[in-house]
Length: 297
Image 1 (spheres, helix red, strand yellow):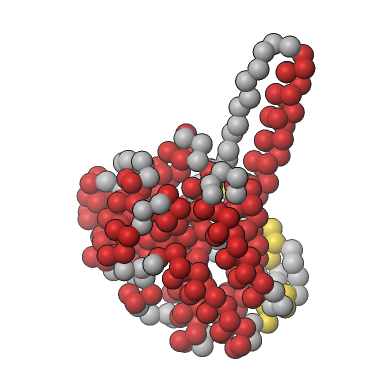
Image 2 (image 1 turned 120 degrees about the horizontal axis):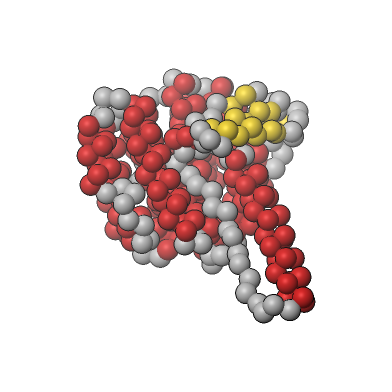
C-alpha cells in the first residue's frame, strides 16, 4: 500500500542533533573527538530514518477527508486552553496539537478558525523563544490566500520550517520531538473519533496502519529522551498505547520510506494489511483520547 505523503506541508519537524567536542591537540584527544563524531553521525542517521517514516498530521487529515469525514470543530483543542500551558513540555506538545488542528481547519476551508489556531501556535512558539514563525506577516499571507487551500498549507509549512530552523540552530531536538509527538497524537485522536462515528472501514484500516508510525515515533523519542525531561512521560504513554495495539495482525512488517529531500516529500510504501476489530478500535480510541486529553488539560 502506498501512503500519500505531503511532508512539504509538514506540521512536524526533524532536528539532527550535532554535538561538538573540545579538546587539546594531543593524539588521544583527537581520537576521542573522532569517535564521538562517528557515534553522533550514526545516531543522526538513525533519527533521520525514524523521522521520515512518520506521516505528517496533514497526511493523516487528508486521509480522513478522502474517507468522507465531515468537519467537526468539537474534535479540536479549544483555543482558550492555550493560556494553560506553562512548562516547555506542555508548550511543545500543544504547539504540535494546535499545528495539527490548524492543518485540519485549513484542509476543510475553515479559514476563520484557521486564523484562531494560528494565533494559538504563535503564542506557544513565541513563549518558546521562537519568533517570526507565526507573526503578523504570516497572518497577512494567510488572509491574502484564504480561497486557496494549497497556498494556505504552503504558508503553514513555511512557518513550521522557520521553527525547525530555530530549533536546529539552538540544538533543541527534544523540543522538536515533543512537537512531532503532539501533532501525531492529535491526528490519531481525530482519526479514531471519526472512525468510531462513521464506521468507515477504509479509515479503520488507516488507524491500524498507525501501529507502524507509533513504533517509529517511540524510536524517535528514545533518541532524544536525554535532551528533555518531559519526553520520559510521553514515552510511557506512547508505550502503553503501543501495548494496546500489540496484537493487531499485520501480514507484513516491511516499510520503506522514499524521500525527496529537495522538495521535502516522503512517500511511505508497505504491503501491510491490518485486522482491526471493533473492540480493538474501541480500545485504541479510548487510549488515544486519554493521552491527548492529558496533554491538553
